[in-house]
Amino acid sequence: MALGLRLVLFGPPGAGKGTQAQLLHTHFDLAHISSGDLFRRHLGLGTPLGLRAKEYMKRGELVPDDVTIDIILDKVMCIPDDEGFILDGFPRNPNQAHELEKKLITESRDLDKVVHIDVSEPELLRRLGGRYTCRACQAPHAIAPGEEASARTCDKCGGELYQRDDDAPAAVKKRIQVYNDETVPVLGFYRERGVLVEISGDDTVDEVNKRVMAALDA
Ligand code: ADP
Image (cartoon, rainbow, N blue to C red; front, side, top):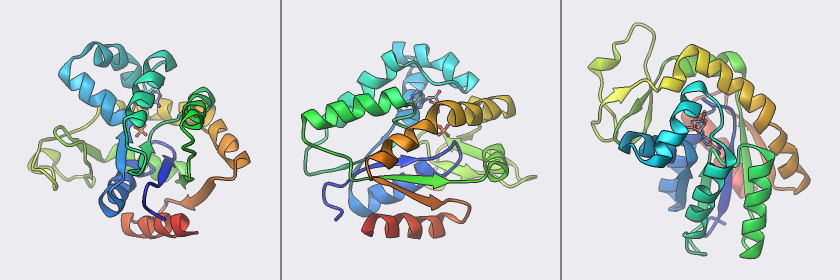
């Protein structure tokens, strides 16, 4: 089943999409395309794309489709047919979902599964409030209340941990609102196509990973 699997990981900010995508990437050797990581890399490098995306990201709003769609679809189209991919953070509104579908249809490469990782809002707020990200490899880390983030480095690569601008409380509220208003309608789109699987993400990384794996074998 895994060879060439084409997946979307879907869920609210803080659902753990990036963490699960990384685990699937390692397990199945699928390409991992994270729109948020891509924008953050451009931001760090100060490219024109990064500069354009910066203010939207800081406010917790979506970067406009005219910037986002081409850059992500180009990446998807570069992946060899037999490799498969995990999309994490894209599509994030119905227009992006339509454009992705159009592009995949022209290549006869449909999505196999869209995995919706659902997490309650109080748990999202708790997680995002303590989330620190590695500047070098983008891996997320949970910092407990009272724990000093500056005393820790990245578990994976030893890089510096920092708190993303959009993990500040006002931006977190906005991101959850944008998710509910603009992203949730995409679920109906994939439900109609029969590729949506829904799992609860209100649990440990390992438990959620077991559910993701079970959903993929179904
Ligand atoms: P999270 O899922 O935790 O909100 P991401 O890293 O996926 O974080 O995204 C961070 C920010 O990058 C978003 O709030 C948005 O500004 C921008 N972004 C990421 N993916 C998209 C997308 N598909 N369309 C528009 N903007 C996006």
